Image (cartoon, rainbow, N blue to C red):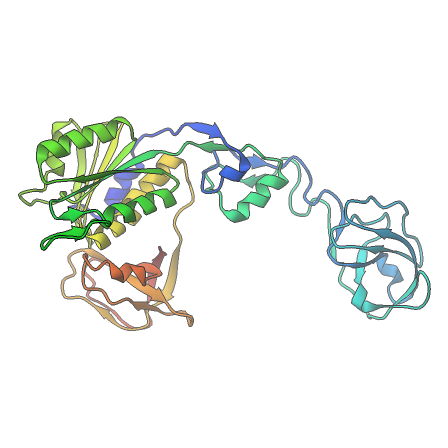
Length: 391
């Protein structure tokens, strides 16, 4: 049994060089940028108005101004403004020559045709300066960034309509167990519906990979071996849920050894999630996760997801929040680092969600994150800051 940090070190040491491809900008969401996105222009490309108002010189504030031109977005100014002059201007339009501020309409009054008086005693500049956001050659999105909605405008502004991204790894998912049936089937007296595979597939897709659900394999070693070999042929990574422990029908470790995959660790000092297998033959990788839904979810977030980030080229680390716990949390046995689901309240503290153990899948559906209690620690007192990983 190894600590979480040791397992992550093993994961980080795996060699994998993802291939790249160009995709249409609209298909880039969730993909990882394979090279720095660099600006080819000034942003903004010219001094522009941040308000609807009148563009003038600061030194003329407080006086009566002649309106000499109307400037709308997309129209280049024709006339410079001089003493006691201004141009009516719309938000986003280019400032005329000599103007260094924009007075909002609300701070002016009309005193006749093409004449205004500025009634405010002072005014903010209300000007977006040329290149204040970025200039040619500046890095806008660093290599290794996973594209989110807020990055799409950056790609468009840089003219990066066909960004280079890393290819999406293919991840196969197998569920094992005689007790499992698919969600559309009514379970028998000793059966349960297969929930893990669909949870894991969603986690895989959220990680920017392509999930392929292979199906349920019964507790038969030869059947599992055949399915594992077939799944590895067409995928980069295999995730098997169930069968990773030491029960009479836990065949995953045996099968992996028989197909010449080296097991790099098979127990993790965390709770829940102790039974876990990670194996590789240098070309393909396999994770054997717990059959319990909370355990497999946490194992994925803590171990599998960092590995998939590596495969996708993502260099952005998960966010941990330090938040006070809203009530005391205790446990009897402290021989492993423990992770438990929590709800973030509107006032800031986190409250542990009702949690009956690693098979209590409903505990995750009401949680915002998972917090942890360290090895050897029995109690977290109310108000103590805890690390919370959003899920």
